[in-house]
Image (cartoon, rainbow, N blue to C red):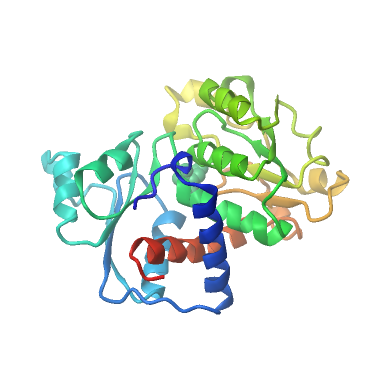
Length: 301
Ligand code: NCD
């Protein structure tokens, strides 16, 4: 099995991974993948995803080989993506791959026989981020079902957003999609939400939704995906969550503020100590969820 897109996972797949993650975090299950080696291929920068996969695998007793960007690999000599992936698959039992190119992980999964995990492909999908996001929502809200969730920021280029929308749709969320006009979610998603019968509202105004939602998921404006600096400058500071904004809203009980990180200016650092701020815990949850994912794909469960 591969993990390429939230659109190709079932609700059962997701629920079992969440349940397994709960057991891993609480220590009620102990899994062992010793003797297995996983390749982490990051053709784009990463802190959390790379390190949490690496620590997840090592905490399961497995080993990793890592490529962080392509400077020291034969990609610099002109080796093709396909040849690089096929070569790495000779050494490893699974491949985790991040690329700027949409469809890269799917393509990799089609040319090798070992499991492939998409750790982000361009502005397309980032399914393991969504799995850890859903796990975090479950933990904070006690359920993932029927949540009112605002997704704020770069809804055009944010791959974490594209995965999350499909993940939340499985659990019948009501979505508040907040973005500048130019960064609205792409049309195919609106079409899919309509087909699935998922309620959603689009708006540019964050203050109107703060006290309506159970979860607010804030995202970074994805500078690297813009055609030019000028386009980026126009929208870069569109939203900023401040402490006074949060404190003056009449928030729902259990209001949960999430961000996949890295943040630039979207949430001021004085928000971090508020009880609703869960983004660093969210990053830690990524390590538990990635243990569940790796152990499942390697047949250790
Ligand atoms: C996200 C990504 O790479 O898409 N980061 C992450 O994996 N936590 C979000 C982002 O870069 O803004």
